[in-house]
Image 1 (cartoon, rainbow, N blue to C red):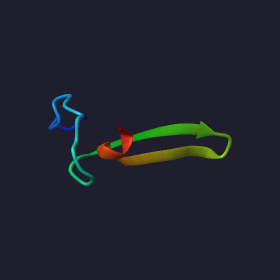
Image 2: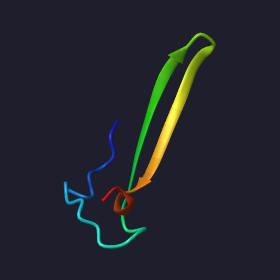
Image 3: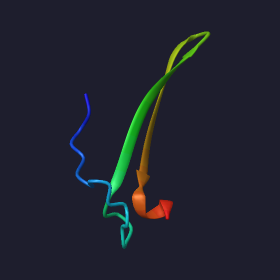
Length: 46
């Protein structure tokens, strides 16, 4: 299930804390599943 795309591919953010993006994935390990979640301020990715 995906959330709504509020940015509509417009990634030219002018200041910090205006737009955040997230992702989550899982990785199989010998001990079970490892879940990885990431939250990034789009402005910091210029």
